[in-house]
Amino acid sequence: MKKQREPDQKTLELKRAGTLNPRPGSVSDTLFKENPFFDPKDLLQVRYEMLRRHNVEGVSIVDVAAKFGVSRPTVYQAHAAFLEAGLSGLLPLHRGPKEGHKLSAEVIEYVRTLRAVKPKLTTTACVQAVQEKFSITIHRRSLERALTSKKKPRNPS
Image (cartoon, rainbow, N blue to C red):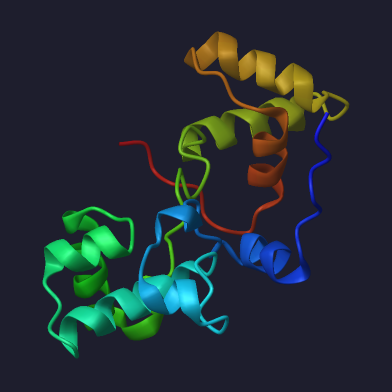
């Protein structure tokens, strides 16, 4: 069985920062193949160089997309993001919900009322009560975070 190599410190840091290129092998640009300064694992560097090639050197979008292993729409999106926000626009956006989208003000108020009546009520029991009353499934930690949050809960849509 082949032993897997441990990732180097730079790869670990790129992954932690969310800028690790998921497909570094698809980057075929000569700079990234010949010059050790250019790292195909660094997504921010790849996107910046991709835009520089097009905007400064005049390489066509089709050729740039092929050399950097992305689709043409990705090049256009990166260009628009760069124009709007500069270098930080090239950073990947966080995916998924940004907050507890199921936990409306009504649900939080219901749980707080339950806890006011029965102070010893567990979070798991509150989750079950919410599921029965509102027919939604929520995670125990989401409810705990929402109850301790100082932010105002969102209003139901």
